[in-house]
Image 1: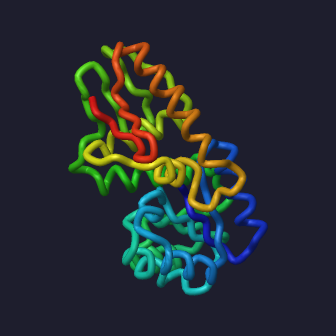
Image 2: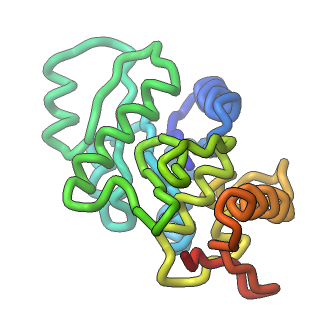
Length: 223
């Protein structure tokens, strides 16, 4: 999920809508709303954040100190006017990247991914589970060396399960990661549909289940 912070509702609405059209969960806040949210939300919900996108808000220089106490997700600042002095101040304060508007959300996502790659430089970019290979760089998984094309949300679910394979995750945790914490337009039950389709595709290719489902307990990658 991408978190957009700006004092202008029109800007928030524009970016949240753009992320939605790309099939990516996002949520928008004004400065006051964001501060209340990050101070009170739970760790599980914060783990669903892929990046903080910070636009025109008071006290933006202090955002890295505020956010880093709760999340390591990339912080990307959006600038209306190009200013070297201001850009350097933002980097010095701890902002991970500064982008001048207008900017497409695909570029924001690519920049966030680039920051994550640097952060996770020592972590594996793929997990090889016998015949199944799962990547964490946007590529489809492979079965016996052949790509298995998956819709974005099914691929994200598989990646999330593999990253958390040592524990069982609930439908709510998966929903928050894929659709966003405050998405009232979609019911959590949609995850059951995604999971059913994903498990069927993997079972057809592999001949066995790699995702264990337990009613009321959740799901776990078990390959």
